[in-house]
Image (cartoon, rainbow, N blue to C red; front, side):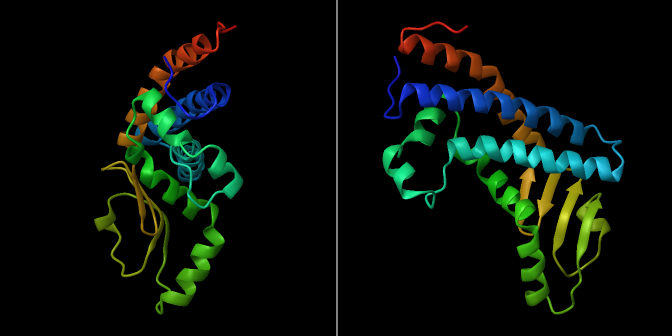
Length: 188
């Protein structure tokens, strides 16, 4: 029995998006961790991983600043889905912050330029952080020894995120089935 304030049809649509993007993020995260990608491919993979994982995070943790009309209509959407997928919303918290840094890179560069007097900037580094002796910020850093993806102050443990995405992908068919049954239909 579904115990949710969000309309079941909407939850079903969002569960389908979770399944799609969680599968994509898990695949891309595994590719990042396997190592051996040349630098350009690594950063393309990282961009797509962050986008897909953040899309999943946004479904479970909608921003309080989103359009007021939507917030008023579906205030419990994230909690309803988190309960159905049996996921802790905080497991995905860092992904959205990292995505924001990727998407708003122009603003991050401007902020850096204004705030960092030495203009000491490291961009798209790969390897342990200790290898790069610097006082400034790290823009796009992949620590392949700890599976950490960093941009400015945002950091994501890719291995942990892949595990969460795998759990979501595994649970999605059951969630979709339960949603279909609650409205008296069966999946196609």
